[in-house]
Length: 584
Image (cartoon, rainbow, N blue to C red):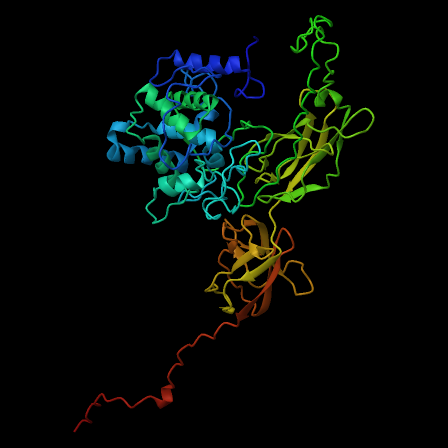
C-alpha cells in the first residue's frame, strides 16, 4: 500500500491494516504496555469487570479516532516540536496532579499521567484544545450524543438531567466523558473547591485515574493496562487508539497555552456530529437504514447458474438469476448536490452562527436520494469550528435527501472562509458556501460610576473614566473602541481645546484609537488633564456595533493665587529704639 503522508492519520483515509501497522510499529519500540491488538477480536482483559457504576465509564460513546504521527514528537535533530504533542497548560497540570495523587492513594497502580493524556485526547481533544477557565472548568459543557440506542447504547436517564441536561436519556459529560451513573459513584474533587464537577478537568482527571486503577490493577502490567482502557470503552479500536497516543506522549510532550491545543477531526461514528459543547440536545442528522434484500427464492434442484443453492451471487456476476439486483448504492445514485436553502453565513467573533449549512442530494431525474454520506469541511484561514471543535464532519441524508451540518462556532479570527460540502465516495461537484466572522460588537455603553468628572484648569482629573460595554444585555469582551473629545453633542468633530490625554511623548492628544474591552466588557481610559480653558466639555466613546456614550467633563477656572500685601511705611509702628540723649 502506498505510504500515507500528512499531519495525522485519519480514520477516513487509513485502512484497518494501516492502523494496525501503526500500533505494531509502536509496539516494536518495546515500550511498556504497548502491544498490537487484533482489531477484529477482543483484546486481552476485555472480560474484566469494571467498577460497579456501569459497563464502561463512557457508556461506549463515540470518540476521536485520529492517530498520532509515527515520528517522535520531539525530532532528534532539535527541530520544532510536533503540534500534536502539545497539551494545554491547565489540562496538562490536571493530568500530572492526578498522577501524583494516585502515587499516594494507590501506589501499586503505577498510573502514568500520559495514560490520562491519551484518554483525554481521544475523548475530548483535551477539553476541546484546552478551552477551560483558570479553575479548570470548561468554558462550555462538553456533552456526547444522546444515548438513545440510535447507533449507540441505550441508557435511560439516571441523573434527572443534573449533569447532562437530558431527563430522558443519559449523555457522556465533560473532558473525560463520564456517563452520569458512573460519575455518581466515581466522581472526585480534584481542585479542592468542595464540588465534584465532571466538566472540571481536575475533577475529571482524578476520577478517571481512580477508575482506571480499580480492581487493584497494576498499569505497569500489560494485561491490566488493557483491562483498564477497555473498561473505559469496550472497543478494540478504542484500545489501539489510546495505546497509540500513550506511546506518543511517553516519547515527549510540551505545554501550549489554554485554548491552543490541536483539535482532532474524525470520530468513531461519522454519522453523528462530534461532541457537543452545549447543554441542549443537538439535532441528530436523519438517517435511512439500507433496505434489506428480498429473500432468495428456493433453488430448482439443479436449475439456475448456481445449481439451485441459496448462496449469494458471487462478485463476478454469476449466481441465481432470480435473486434481485441490489442496484446502485446511494452515493452512486447521486447526480447533483445542491444548496438546500442555506442563508447568509455570518457571525460575530466568539458567537455561534445562526444559520446552518444544508445541502440536498438529487438523482439524475431530480428525485431525493437518502442514505448518502455528505462531508462538510471548513476551509481557509479561520479558527471557526463545527460544534464540538472539528473542522470536518460527515452527515447522512434523510428521506428528503437533505443533510444539515452541525452549528458553526466562530473563533476570534475575523474574515471570510469557506464551508465545502462533498459526497463521500462519489465524484460529483461539491457545493461551496462563503461564511464570514465579523469583529466583536457592543450595542450599549455605560459608566461604572455616576461621580461627576470635575477638574481645575491646568490640573489633572482625579478620577479616570471607566465604562462597561454590553451586547444584547451581556458583557461584551474584546470589543474595539475609540475615545475622542468632541466639539458638542451635535458636532462630533474633534475639539482642539479643553481636556486631553497624554501621548507617549507627553504631548496632549484628544483622540484615542485601538482600545479594547477586557474579559468583563470593561474599558478604563488613561488619565485626563485640563488645559487653561475653563468650561464644560464632552468626551465621546464609541465601539464596533454601535455602542456610543457621551461623557460630560467640567473644567473650573483656576483659583486666584493669594500674594501677601507689603506694609505701609507710614503706618509702621514707631521705633522702640531709644534715641540719643541731647547734650547737656
